[in-house]
Length: 499
Image (cartoon, rainbow, N blue to C red; front, side, top):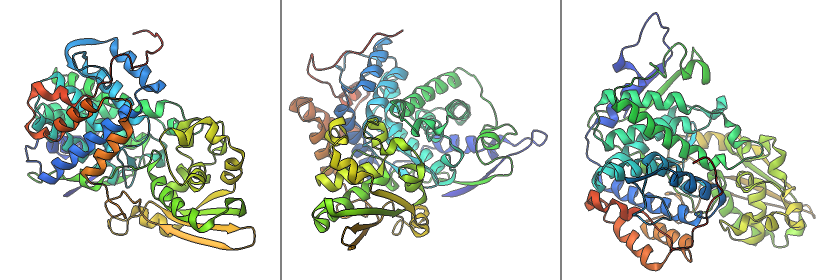
Protein backbone atom coordinates (compact mmCIF):
# COMPACT_ATOMS: atom_id res chain seq x y z
CA UNK A 1 0.00 0.00 0.00
CA UNK A 2 1.09 3.55 -0.68
CA UNK A 3 0.17 6.41 1.68
CA UNK A 4 -0.93 9.60 -0.06
CA UNK A 5 -0.86 12.95 1.71
CA UNK A 6 -4.02 14.96 1.02
CA UNK A 7 -4.31 18.65 1.93
CA UNK A 8 -6.02 21.79 0.68
CA UNK A 9 -4.19 23.80 -1.99
CA UNK A 10 -5.03 27.45 -2.73
CA UNK A 11 -6.23 28.25 -6.24
CA UNK A 12 -3.14 30.34 -6.92
CA UNK A 13 -0.99 27.20 -6.71
CA UNK A 14 -2.93 24.62 -8.76
CA UNK A 15 -2.38 20.97 -7.98
CA UNK A 16 -1.41 18.65 -10.84
CA UNK A 17 -4.00 16.00 -11.66
CA UNK A 18 -1.66 13.14 -10.90
CA UNK A 19 -1.18 14.54 -7.39
CA UNK A 20 -4.92 14.69 -6.64
CA UNK A 21 -6.65 12.01 -4.56
CA UNK A 22 -9.45 11.58 -7.12
CA UNK A 23 -6.87 10.86 -9.84
CA UNK A 24 -5.10 8.34 -7.61
CA UNK A 25 -8.42 6.63 -6.91
CA UNK A 26 -9.08 6.53 -10.66
CA UNK A 27 -5.65 5.03 -11.29
CA UNK A 28 -6.40 2.23 -8.83
CA UNK A 29 -9.74 1.58 -10.53
CA UNK A 30 -8.14 1.50 -13.98
CA UNK A 31 -5.38 -0.89 -12.87
CA UNK A 32 -6.05 -4.28 -14.48
CA UNK A 33 -4.47 -6.26 -11.64
CA UNK A 34 -5.94 -9.76 -11.13
CA UNK A 35 -8.27 -10.53 -8.23
CA UNK A 36 -6.83 -13.10 -5.82
CA UNK A 37 -8.78 -16.31 -5.13
CA UNK A 38 -9.64 -15.63 -1.50
CA UNK A 39 -10.88 -12.16 -2.43
CA UNK A 40 -13.06 -13.56 -5.21
CA UNK A 41 -14.47 -16.13 -2.76
CA UNK A 42 -15.28 -13.40 -0.23
CA UNK A 43 -17.02 -11.35 -2.92
CA UNK A 44 -19.28 -14.34 -3.56
CA UNK A 45 -19.98 -14.54 0.19
CA UNK A 46 -21.03 -10.91 0.27
CA UNK A 47 -23.31 -11.25 -2.77
CA UNK A 48 -25.02 -14.10 -0.90
CA UNK A 49 -25.18 -11.93 2.22
CA UNK A 50 -26.75 -9.01 0.34
CA UNK A 51 -29.37 -11.22 -1.27
CA UNK A 52 -30.27 -12.76 2.10
CA UNK A 53 -30.98 -9.47 3.85
CA UNK A 54 -32.65 -7.96 0.78
CA UNK A 55 -35.18 -10.76 0.44
CA UNK A 56 -35.84 -10.74 4.20
CA UNK A 57 -36.77 -7.05 3.85
CA UNK A 58 -38.57 -7.35 0.53
CA UNK A 59 -42.05 -6.37 1.76
CA UNK A 60 -41.04 -3.73 4.28
CA UNK A 61 -42.45 -0.31 3.45
CA UNK A 62 -39.23 1.52 2.39
CA UNK A 63 -38.30 -1.38 0.11
CA UNK A 64 -41.78 -1.53 -1.38
CA UNK A 65 -41.65 2.21 -2.10
CA UNK A 66 -38.20 2.02 -3.69
CA UNK A 67 -39.22 -0.96 -5.85
CA UNK A 68 -42.43 0.75 -6.97
CA UNK A 69 -40.46 3.85 -7.94
CA UNK A 70 -38.01 1.73 -9.93
CA UNK A 71 -40.88 0.09 -11.82
CA UNK A 72 -41.74 3.52 -13.16
CA UNK A 73 -38.55 3.32 -15.24
CA UNK A 74 -38.79 0.09 -17.27
CA UNK A 75 -36.02 -0.76 -19.74
CA UNK A 76 -35.85 -3.91 -21.83
CA UNK A 77 -32.06 -4.22 -21.62
CA UNK A 78 -31.87 -2.90 -18.05
CA UNK A 79 -31.19 -4.53 -14.68
CA UNK A 80 -33.13 -6.88 -12.44
CA UNK A 81 -34.88 -5.97 -9.20
CA UNK A 82 -34.94 -8.18 -6.11
CA UNK A 83 -38.27 -9.98 -5.77
CA UNK A 84 -39.32 -9.53 -9.42
CA UNK A 85 -38.87 -12.02 -12.26
CA UNK A 86 -35.58 -11.59 -14.12
CA UNK A 87 -37.44 -10.74 -17.31
CA UNK A 88 -38.80 -7.57 -15.78
CA UNK A 89 -36.02 -5.00 -16.08
CA UNK A 90 -35.60 -1.35 -15.17
CA UNK A 91 -33.03 1.34 -15.88
CA UNK A 92 -29.84 0.47 -13.94
CA UNK A 93 -29.76 3.55 -11.72
CA UNK A 94 -33.28 2.71 -10.54
CA UNK A 95 -32.40 -0.95 -10.00
CA UNK A 96 -29.51 0.29 -7.85
CA UNK A 97 -31.99 2.43 -5.92
CA UNK A 98 -34.45 -0.42 -5.31
CA UNK A 99 -31.88 -3.12 -4.59
CA UNK A 100 -29.66 -0.87 -2.50
CA UNK A 101 -32.62 0.02 -0.28
CA UNK A 102 -33.53 -3.66 0.13
CA UNK A 103 -29.96 -4.55 1.11
CA UNK A 104 -29.68 -1.74 3.64
CA UNK A 105 -33.13 -1.86 5.25
CA UNK A 106 -32.47 -4.47 7.96
CA UNK A 107 -28.99 -3.18 8.88
CA UNK A 108 -27.65 -6.72 8.66
CA UNK A 109 -24.99 -6.86 5.94
CA UNK A 110 -21.26 -6.22 6.11
CA UNK A 111 -19.28 -3.49 7.86
CA UNK A 112 -15.86 -1.89 8.11
CA UNK A 113 -14.92 0.50 10.92
CA UNK A 114 -11.82 2.66 11.24
CA UNK A 115 -11.48 6.47 11.13
CA UNK A 116 -15.09 6.38 9.97
CA UNK A 117 -17.58 3.57 9.46
CA UNK A 118 -19.08 1.93 6.43
CA UNK A 119 -21.16 -0.85 4.93
CA UNK A 120 -19.04 -1.70 1.88
CA UNK A 121 -21.58 -4.27 0.64
CA UNK A 122 -23.52 -1.19 -0.50
CA UNK A 123 -21.13 -1.13 -3.47
CA UNK A 124 -22.63 -4.29 -4.93
CA UNK A 125 -26.15 -3.18 -6.05
CA UNK A 126 -25.13 -0.36 -8.43
CA UNK A 127 -22.16 -2.26 -9.85
CA UNK A 128 -24.30 -5.36 -10.46
CA UNK A 129 -27.05 -3.25 -12.04
CA UNK A 130 -24.64 -1.69 -14.52
CA UNK A 131 -23.06 -5.09 -15.22
CA UNK A 132 -26.47 -6.51 -16.16
CA UNK A 133 -27.42 -3.49 -18.28
CA UNK A 134 -24.07 -3.31 -20.10
CA UNK A 135 -23.55 -7.02 -20.68
CA UNK A 136 -20.58 -7.69 -18.45
CA UNK A 137 -19.51 -11.13 -17.22
CA UNK A 138 -19.20 -12.57 -13.73
CA UNK A 139 -15.44 -12.16 -13.90
CA UNK A 140 -15.87 -8.47 -14.77
CA UNK A 141 -18.24 -8.11 -11.82
CA UNK A 142 -15.71 -9.61 -9.41
CA UNK A 143 -13.02 -7.16 -10.52
CA UNK A 144 -15.40 -4.22 -10.16
CA UNK A 145 -16.65 -5.17 -6.71
CA UNK A 146 -13.06 -5.61 -5.52
CA UNK A 147 -12.44 -2.00 -6.57
CA UNK A 148 -15.54 -0.66 -4.85
CA UNK A 149 -14.61 -2.31 -1.57
CA UNK A 150 -11.00 -1.18 -1.86
CA UNK A 151 -11.73 2.49 -2.42
CA UNK A 152 -14.43 2.84 0.22
CA UNK A 153 -12.45 0.98 2.88
CA UNK A 154 -9.26 2.93 2.15
CA UNK A 155 -11.12 6.24 2.46
CA UNK A 156 -12.70 5.04 5.71
CA UNK A 157 -9.27 4.12 7.07
CA UNK A 158 -8.08 7.70 6.67
CA UNK A 159 -10.85 10.32 6.61
CA UNK A 160 -13.37 10.72 9.42
CA UNK A 161 -16.76 11.99 8.29
CA UNK A 162 -18.90 11.66 11.40
CA UNK A 163 -16.63 14.00 13.40
CA UNK A 164 -17.80 16.73 11.04
CA UNK A 165 -21.41 15.48 11.09
CA UNK A 166 -21.29 14.14 7.53
CA UNK A 167 -22.94 10.87 6.55
CA UNK A 168 -20.81 7.91 5.50
CA UNK A 169 -22.15 7.79 1.93
CA UNK A 170 -19.62 10.52 1.07
CA UNK A 171 -17.01 7.73 0.91
CA UNK A 172 -19.40 5.22 -0.62
CA UNK A 173 -20.45 7.15 -3.73
CA UNK A 174 -16.93 7.69 -5.15
CA UNK A 175 -16.15 4.03 -4.42
CA UNK A 176 -19.23 2.94 -6.36
CA UNK A 177 -18.22 5.20 -9.26
CA UNK A 178 -14.69 3.76 -9.21
CA UNK A 179 -16.08 0.21 -9.19
CA UNK A 180 -18.29 0.95 -12.19
CA UNK A 181 -15.24 2.43 -13.91
CA UNK A 182 -13.39 -0.84 -13.39
CA UNK A 183 -16.41 -2.81 -14.60
CA UNK A 184 -16.61 -0.86 -17.87
CA UNK A 185 -12.81 -0.71 -18.32
CA UNK A 186 -12.95 3.06 -18.55
CA UNK A 187 -9.75 5.10 -18.84
CA UNK A 188 -8.45 6.84 -15.73
CA UNK A 189 -9.43 10.26 -17.12
CA UNK A 190 -13.11 9.30 -17.27
CA UNK A 191 -13.10 7.60 -13.87
CA UNK A 192 -11.37 10.67 -12.39
CA UNK A 193 -14.20 12.95 -13.51
CA UNK A 194 -16.86 10.47 -12.34
CA UNK A 195 -15.25 10.12 -8.90
CA UNK A 196 -15.13 13.89 -8.45
CA UNK A 197 -18.76 14.27 -9.46
CA UNK A 198 -19.70 11.46 -7.07
CA UNK A 199 -17.90 13.15 -4.17
CA UNK A 200 -19.45 16.52 -4.97
CA UNK A 201 -23.05 15.31 -4.96
CA UNK A 202 -22.91 12.85 -2.05
CA UNK A 203 -21.94 14.96 0.97
CA UNK A 204 -24.95 14.99 3.30
CA UNK A 205 -25.39 15.51 7.03
CA UNK A 206 -25.57 12.94 9.82
CA UNK A 207 -29.05 14.02 10.81
CA UNK A 208 -30.18 10.95 8.85
CA UNK A 209 -28.75 8.85 11.70
CA UNK A 210 -29.63 11.02 14.68
CA UNK A 211 -32.84 11.86 16.51
CA UNK A 212 -35.93 10.21 15.05
CA UNK A 213 -34.19 8.03 12.49
CA UNK A 214 -36.36 7.53 9.42
CA UNK A 215 -36.37 5.24 6.39
CA UNK A 216 -33.75 7.52 4.81
CA UNK A 217 -31.14 5.44 6.66
CA UNK A 218 -31.96 2.65 4.17
CA UNK A 219 -32.35 4.98 1.21
CA UNK A 220 -29.06 6.87 1.70
CA UNK A 221 -26.63 4.26 0.29
CA UNK A 222 -29.11 3.40 -2.47
CA UNK A 223 -29.24 7.08 -3.38
CA UNK A 224 -25.44 7.11 -3.47
CA UNK A 225 -25.51 4.22 -5.93
CA UNK A 226 -27.98 6.02 -8.14
CA UNK A 227 -25.82 9.16 -8.04
CA UNK A 228 -22.70 7.14 -8.84
CA UNK A 229 -24.23 5.58 -11.96
CA UNK A 230 -25.39 8.98 -13.15
CA UNK A 231 -21.93 10.47 -12.48
CA UNK A 232 -20.24 7.77 -14.56
CA UNK A 233 -22.78 8.22 -17.34
CA UNK A 234 -22.06 11.96 -17.53
CA UNK A 235 -18.30 11.43 -17.43
CA UNK A 236 -18.50 8.85 -20.24
CA UNK A 237 -20.21 11.53 -22.34
CA UNK A 238 -17.27 13.87 -21.80
CA UNK A 239 -18.61 15.98 -18.96
CA UNK A 240 -16.22 17.26 -16.31
CA UNK A 241 -16.49 17.79 -12.57
CA UNK A 242 -15.65 20.32 -9.83
CA UNK A 243 -11.89 19.95 -9.46
CA UNK A 244 -9.89 19.28 -7.38
CA UNK A 245 -12.80 18.03 -5.30
CA UNK A 246 -10.78 16.99 -2.26
CA UNK A 247 -7.91 19.51 -2.31
CA UNK A 248 -9.43 22.66 -3.79
CA UNK A 249 -9.73 25.98 -1.99
CA UNK A 250 -13.50 25.52 -1.72
CA UNK A 251 -13.38 21.71 -1.63
CA UNK A 252 -15.09 19.21 0.64
CA UNK A 253 -12.03 19.07 2.90
CA UNK A 254 -11.81 22.85 3.15
CA UNK A 255 -15.46 23.45 4.04
CA UNK A 256 -17.12 20.17 4.98
CA UNK A 257 -14.37 18.29 6.81
CA UNK A 258 -11.36 19.35 8.89
CA UNK A 259 -10.73 22.65 7.09
CA UNK A 260 -8.02 24.34 5.04
CA UNK A 261 -5.20 23.28 7.39
CA UNK A 262 -6.18 19.62 7.51
CA UNK A 263 -3.81 16.86 6.43
CA UNK A 264 -5.02 13.33 5.70
CA UNK A 265 -3.00 10.27 4.75
CA UNK A 266 -4.98 7.92 2.51
CA UNK A 267 -3.64 4.41 1.79
CA UNK A 268 -4.21 3.00 -1.69
CA UNK A 269 -2.78 -0.03 -3.50
CA UNK A 270 0.39 0.60 -5.48
CA UNK A 271 0.31 -0.04 -9.25
CA UNK A 272 0.03 -3.78 -9.80
CA UNK A 273 -0.86 -4.47 -6.16
CA UNK A 274 -3.95 -6.68 -5.63
CA UNK A 275 -7.07 -5.10 -4.15
CA UNK A 276 -7.60 -6.96 -0.85
CA UNK A 277 -9.55 -4.53 1.34
CA UNK A 278 -12.68 -6.70 1.40
CA UNK A 279 -10.76 -9.18 3.56
CA UNK A 280 -10.62 -6.59 6.36
CA UNK A 281 -14.42 -6.19 6.43
CA UNK A 282 -16.88 -8.39 8.32
CA UNK A 283 -20.55 -9.23 8.21
CA UNK A 284 -23.27 -9.22 10.84
CA UNK A 285 -24.90 -12.19 12.48
CA UNK A 286 -27.50 -9.96 14.16
CA UNK A 287 -29.71 -7.31 12.61
CA UNK A 288 -28.43 -4.19 14.38
CA UNK A 289 -25.69 -1.54 14.25
CA UNK A 290 -22.27 -3.25 14.06
CA UNK A 291 -21.02 -1.92 17.40
CA UNK A 292 -23.83 -3.88 19.02
CA UNK A 293 -22.80 -7.25 17.55
CA UNK A 294 -20.23 -8.19 20.22
CA UNK A 295 -22.42 -6.72 22.95
CA UNK A 296 -25.39 -8.85 21.83
CA UNK A 297 -23.19 -11.95 22.07
CA UNK A 298 -21.99 -10.75 25.47
CA UNK A 299 -25.58 -10.26 26.66
CA UNK A 300 -26.36 -13.86 25.74
CA UNK A 301 -23.43 -14.95 27.89
CA UNK A 302 -24.23 -12.64 30.80
CA UNK A 303 -27.89 -13.63 31.13
CA UNK A 304 -26.81 -17.03 32.40
CA UNK A 305 -24.69 -15.39 35.11
CA UNK A 306 -27.37 -12.89 36.15
CA UNK A 307 -30.35 -15.18 36.33
CA UNK A 308 -33.34 -13.18 37.59
CA UNK A 309 -33.18 -9.89 35.67
CA UNK A 310 -35.52 -8.17 38.13
CA UNK A 311 -32.54 -8.10 40.53
CA UNK A 312 -30.61 -5.79 38.19
CA UNK A 313 -30.12 -2.34 39.67
CA UNK A 314 -27.82 -0.85 37.05
CA UNK A 315 -25.85 -1.85 33.94
CA UNK A 316 -22.89 0.18 32.72
CA UNK A 317 -21.33 -0.58 29.33
CA UNK A 318 -17.74 0.68 29.14
CA UNK A 319 -16.97 1.01 25.47
CA UNK A 320 -15.43 3.08 22.68
CA UNK A 321 -16.04 6.73 21.90
CA UNK A 322 -17.89 5.77 18.73
CA UNK A 323 -20.23 3.29 20.40
CA UNK A 324 -20.94 5.64 23.30
CA UNK A 325 -21.71 8.67 21.15
CA UNK A 326 -23.43 6.99 18.18
CA UNK A 327 -25.61 4.26 19.72
CA UNK A 328 -25.14 4.86 23.45
CA UNK A 329 -26.27 7.38 26.04
CA UNK A 330 -23.53 9.74 24.85
CA UNK A 331 -25.69 10.50 21.80
CA UNK A 332 -28.08 12.39 24.13
CA UNK A 333 -31.00 11.18 22.03
CA UNK A 334 -34.16 10.69 24.13
CA UNK A 335 -35.53 8.64 21.23
CA UNK A 336 -32.98 5.92 22.02
CA UNK A 337 -34.84 5.34 25.30
CA UNK A 338 -38.34 5.64 23.85
CA UNK A 339 -40.39 2.41 23.44
CA UNK A 340 -42.40 4.13 20.69
CA UNK A 341 -39.28 4.90 18.63
CA UNK A 342 -38.95 3.63 15.06
CA UNK A 343 -37.14 0.42 14.23
CA UNK A 344 -34.43 2.52 12.60
CA UNK A 345 -33.87 4.25 15.95
CA UNK A 346 -34.08 1.11 18.08
CA UNK A 347 -31.39 -0.67 16.06
CA UNK A 348 -29.16 2.30 16.92
CA UNK A 349 -29.85 2.11 20.67
CA UNK A 350 -27.45 -0.24 22.45
CA UNK A 351 -29.47 0.25 25.62
CA UNK A 352 -32.57 -1.23 23.99
CA UNK A 353 -30.62 -3.92 22.16
CA UNK A 354 -28.72 -5.06 25.24
CA UNK A 355 -31.92 -5.24 27.32
CA UNK A 356 -33.76 -7.37 24.76
CA UNK A 357 -30.76 -9.65 24.20
CA UNK A 358 -30.51 -10.18 27.96
CA UNK A 359 -34.19 -11.03 28.26
CA UNK A 360 -34.60 -13.19 25.16
CA UNK A 361 -31.23 -14.87 24.71
CA UNK A 362 -31.74 -14.56 20.95
CA UNK A 363 -31.95 -11.88 18.30
CA UNK A 364 -34.47 -11.82 15.47
CA UNK A 365 -34.48 -9.34 12.61
CA UNK A 366 -38.24 -8.80 12.91
CA UNK A 367 -39.50 -10.01 16.29
CA UNK A 368 -36.85 -8.17 18.32
CA UNK A 369 -38.13 -4.82 17.02
CA UNK A 370 -41.91 -5.03 17.05
CA UNK A 371 -43.80 -2.29 18.93
CA UNK A 372 -45.17 -4.97 21.24
CA UNK A 373 -41.67 -6.21 22.02
CA UNK A 374 -40.30 -2.71 22.62
CA UNK A 375 -43.24 -1.73 24.80
CA UNK A 376 -43.08 -4.49 27.41
CA UNK A 377 -43.03 -2.91 30.86
CA UNK A 378 -40.23 -5.13 32.19
CA UNK A 379 -38.16 -4.44 29.06
CA UNK A 380 -38.57 -0.68 29.41
CA UNK A 381 -37.62 -0.88 33.08
CA UNK A 382 -34.43 -2.86 32.32
CA UNK A 383 -33.64 -0.72 29.28
CA UNK A 384 -33.69 2.46 31.38
CA UNK A 385 -31.20 0.97 33.86
CA UNK A 386 -28.54 0.76 31.14
CA UNK A 387 -26.00 3.47 30.34
CA UNK A 388 -22.77 3.66 28.33
CA UNK A 389 -19.48 5.31 29.22
CA UNK A 390 -16.52 5.97 27.01
CA UNK A 391 -13.42 4.05 28.10
CA UNK A 392 -10.12 5.37 26.64
CA UNK A 393 -8.74 1.85 26.30
CA UNK A 394 -11.72 0.64 24.30
CA UNK A 395 -11.49 3.77 22.14
CA UNK A 396 -7.78 3.09 21.55
CA UNK A 397 -8.51 -0.51 20.60
CA UNK A 398 -11.35 0.60 18.31
CA UNK A 399 -8.88 2.74 16.34
CA UNK A 400 -5.97 0.29 16.51
CA UNK A 401 -4.43 -0.71 13.19
CA UNK A 402 -3.42 -4.07 14.64
CA UNK A 403 -6.21 -6.54 13.74
CA UNK A 404 -5.38 -8.69 16.76
CA UNK A 405 -6.24 -5.93 19.24
CA UNK A 406 -8.83 -3.95 17.26
CA UNK A 407 -12.09 -4.18 19.20
CA UNK A 408 -15.74 -3.22 18.73
CA UNK A 409 -17.22 -4.48 21.98
CA UNK A 410 -16.81 -3.43 25.57
CA UNK A 411 -16.79 -4.34 29.24
CA UNK A 412 -20.12 -4.61 31.04
CA UNK A 413 -20.69 -4.14 34.77
CA UNK A 414 -24.01 -5.38 36.14
CA UNK A 415 -24.88 -4.24 39.67
CA UNK A 416 -27.56 -6.28 41.42
CA UNK A 417 -29.91 -5.12 44.16
CA UNK A 418 -27.84 -6.83 46.87
CA UNK A 419 -24.66 -5.02 45.76
CA UNK A 420 -23.19 -7.93 43.81
CA UNK A 421 -21.31 -6.80 40.70
CA UNK A 422 -21.03 -9.12 37.70
CA UNK A 423 -18.45 -8.14 35.07
CA UNK A 424 -17.66 -9.57 31.66
CA UNK A 425 -16.22 -8.29 28.39
CA UNK A 426 -16.01 -9.21 24.72
CA UNK A 427 -13.82 -7.51 22.12
CA UNK A 428 -15.28 -8.80 18.85
CA UNK A 429 -18.48 -10.54 17.81
CA UNK A 430 -18.55 -14.30 17.51
CA UNK A 431 -18.99 -13.99 13.72
CA UNK A 432 -15.94 -11.69 13.32
CA UNK A 433 -12.91 -13.23 11.55
CA UNK A 434 -11.15 -13.28 14.95
CA UNK A 435 -14.28 -14.19 16.90
CA UNK A 436 -15.35 -17.43 18.54
CA UNK A 437 -17.25 -18.62 15.44
CA UNK A 438 -15.96 -16.79 12.32
CA UNK A 439 -18.35 -16.70 9.37
CA UNK A 440 -17.45 -18.95 6.45
CA UNK A 441 -19.26 -19.91 3.24
CA UNK A 442 -21.52 -22.36 5.06
CA UNK A 443 -22.57 -19.60 7.50
CA UNK A 444 -23.41 -17.20 4.67
CA UNK A 445 -25.52 -19.89 3.03
CA UNK A 446 -27.21 -20.69 6.34
CA UNK A 447 -27.96 -16.99 6.85
CA UNK A 448 -29.43 -16.82 3.35
CA UNK A 449 -31.59 -19.90 3.88
CA UNK A 450 -32.76 -18.69 7.31
CA UNK A 451 -33.69 -15.19 6.19
CA UNK A 452 -35.40 -16.26 2.96
CA UNK A 453 -37.26 -19.30 4.32
CA UNK A 454 -40.96 -19.07 3.56
CA UNK A 455 -40.42 -16.08 1.27
CA UNK A 456 -38.91 -17.72 -1.82
CA UNK A 457 -39.15 -21.28 -3.08
CA UNK A 458 -36.42 -23.81 -2.42
CA UNK A 459 -35.90 -24.09 -6.15
CA UNK A 460 -35.29 -20.34 -6.44
CA UNK A 461 -32.85 -20.48 -3.51
CA UNK A 462 -30.96 -23.38 -5.08
CA UNK A 463 -30.74 -21.66 -8.46
CA UNK A 464 -29.34 -18.52 -6.92
CA UNK A 465 -26.80 -20.31 -4.71
CA UNK A 466 -25.60 -22.45 -7.61
CA UNK A 467 -25.20 -19.43 -9.88
CA UNK A 468 -23.44 -17.16 -7.39
CA UNK A 469 -20.95 -19.85 -6.41
CA UNK A 470 -20.03 -20.14 -10.11
CA UNK A 471 -19.67 -16.38 -10.47
CA UNK A 472 -16.24 -16.35 -12.11
CA UNK A 473 -17.55 -18.46 -14.99
CA UNK A 474 -20.92 -16.73 -15.45
CA UNK A 475 -21.41 -15.28 -18.93
CA UNK A 476 -22.98 -11.87 -19.41
CA UNK A 477 -26.27 -13.41 -20.50
CA UNK A 478 -26.40 -15.40 -17.25
CA UNK A 479 -25.86 -12.51 -14.84
CA UNK A 480 -29.63 -12.28 -14.29
CA UNK A 481 -29.30 -15.49 -12.26
CA UNK A 482 -27.96 -13.35 -9.41
CA UNK A 483 -31.47 -12.00 -8.99
CA UNK A 484 -33.85 -13.69 -6.52
CA UNK A 485 -37.57 -13.63 -7.34
CA UNK A 486 -40.59 -14.27 -5.13
CA UNK A 487 -43.47 -16.49 -6.25
CA UNK A 488 -46.17 -14.65 -8.17
CA UNK A 489 -48.49 -12.63 -5.98
CA UNK A 490 -46.17 -12.45 -2.96
CA UNK A 491 -44.86 -8.91 -3.53
CA UNK A 492 -46.76 -6.06 -1.88
CA UNK A 493 -47.64 -3.11 -4.12
CA UNK A 494 -46.60 0.37 -3.10
CA UNK A 495 -48.53 3.61 -2.86
CA UNK A 496 -48.76 5.76 -6.00
CA UNK A 497 -46.37 8.65 -6.45
CA UNK A 498 -45.05 10.68 -9.36
CA UNK A 499 -43.31 7.83 -11.19
